[in-house]
Length: 213
Image (spheres, rainbow, N blue to C red):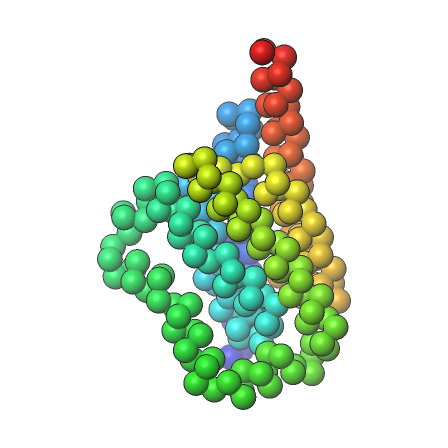
C-alpha cells in the first residue's frame, strides 16, 4: 500500500487519540476533577482500530500488540457506560470479531507473520523488545483502569492510570524517535501534558476533600 496512505491512517488514529484526551481534559477542567466520559472510550476504540491497521501495514509488532491488549477493555468501558447497546448489532459484531479475524489470518500464515513482524530487518530485536515493553506498559494502564472500575462498579480513570500513562508514553516517544515514526512521536507528546494535568486535578480534588472533612 502507498506509504502516504499508511501515514494518513496512522495520523487519523492519533487524531482520534488526541481528541479523546482533549475531550476528557476539557470536561475534567469544567468539573474540577478527573472524569471518564463516554466519548473518551468512543474515540479510544476508533483510534485503536486505525492504529492497529497502521501497525499491521508497517509490520510493527509493538504497535499491534499494544492495541490488541487494550481493545476489549475499550469495549468493556463502552458497555459499562451503556453505549455498547446503542451500536447496531452489525457494528457490534464487526468490532467483536475483527481481532479474532486478524489472529486467524496471522495463524494461517505463521511463517510469514514471523518473518514480517518478529524478524523485520527495519526493527532489530532489542528495539522490538523495547517498543513492545513500552506498549505493554502503556496498555497496562487500561488493565489497571478496568480492574479499578470493575471493583468499584463504574468506569473511572484513577491516578494510577495517569502515572502508568506517563511512563508508557515516554517509552513510546523514545521508540518513535529511534524508529523515526512521526505518528508515535506526535501522538504521545500531546498526551504527556494531559496526563500531568489530570494528576494535578486528582490531587487537588483529594486536597479539597481532606480540607472539607
